[in-house]
Amino acid sequence: MIKHHPKFELLQGFVDGDLPASLAAGIAIHNNMCASCQQKVSQLTEQVAEASFEQSFHHKIIVNDEENLTEIAEMDFDDMINQITASDDVEPTKAIYDERSIDFKGMQYTLPSALRNIELSKTAQIGKLSRARLNLGEGEIHTSLLHIGPGGSIPEHTHKGFELTLLLAGTFADAHGQYVAGDFIMLDKRDQHQPATEHGCLCYTVANDALHFTQGINKLLNPIGAFIY
Amino acid sequence: MLSVHSVLPSLKANATSNNMTNKINHPELCQWLKSIAIDRDKQAFTQVFRFFAPKIQRIAQSKINSEALAAEVVQDTMSNVWRKAHLFDDSKGAATTWVYTIMRNVTFDLLRKMKANKEDNLSDDIWPLAELANTEEEVFTDHIQSRNLQGIIATLPENQQQVVKGFYFMEMSQEQLAVHLDLPLGTIKSRLRLALGKLKLKLGDPHD
Image (cartoon, one colour):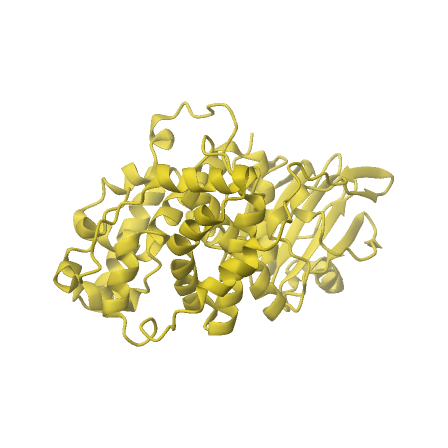
């Protein structure tokens, strides 16, 4: 059973469209596996939509917020209406998408639909770890698919920024317990963890700074931190 | 539905001649969308356009801070409404929710084009329009979770409700709220913090 969910603030940011694509895609993937978060997002979307399009809200804000909103000129709507309605194009009722899959160490995984159009780079490997970068172009935020082979682990580490690990397939465990597909694990710089997997797993990871290994010999592994991140 | 009057009582003094009803006529919006879908009815589209376009323009303007790009959001959103009206299903959700989703997606792709220089148009993969409504069978047995968020917010003290609704549902900044409610900014911030703490508790956030 999924035990780890996005915080309320993240769901709110998701509904508003204010999150980076990396995190928004993570929440979309989680919601596809988690009916309770999907329900929350549906309700929130309905309420935000209702409030956005209420008449008096806008009129009143305009009266009060002189700096920004009174200066917006009404554009020429008639032209726009004519232009739009001149087109006969109609969206196909049912769009058909090809499923997209990826191979890691001979295992084939179907990618979640939220990831089907994101540019994917070639897989790189160190030992039991394989990583394919998702090229979202979000600067310091790096997004990857990370596969850990059976019996593999990531040495204990911390990181300076945030780190999202969303388990897509398989299971892993760390000091906090066992994780299953759909678990949405958001860590920040206070947390340390050392995930290990018995049978192998595939994760969607988003981090905004390199991991930093903390223990003994593992400090020598710090290049792996940059690899995973 | 949210009533602005009960949310922000101090605004009453600023009511204008435009202050008609704040109720959205949902059946009428649905009817217009159906007419667009079935008859390609230009009159109905004009009505829908006149209802949504000025609001979309203001929302986009405040988010993107460019008049030209706000116009682009209006154009793209309303073109989608014209092309996709037959995909709207009023048994799955309100017309406002449907148009909001289109607007949010168009804005997201546009901002991504600007900031990340990517034209990958990911929004429809992240927020699929067709799956907008929750078609899952009833999954909630927990009576607290199944109550809607509005109901939970209604349990907050009145002064916290004002701040939560203003901040989250009306996208007002904390500074704007401070001015509207005539309160110090610190008070707004602490009310919001208190309210969020309670909401998380009631929504069963596993992180706290």
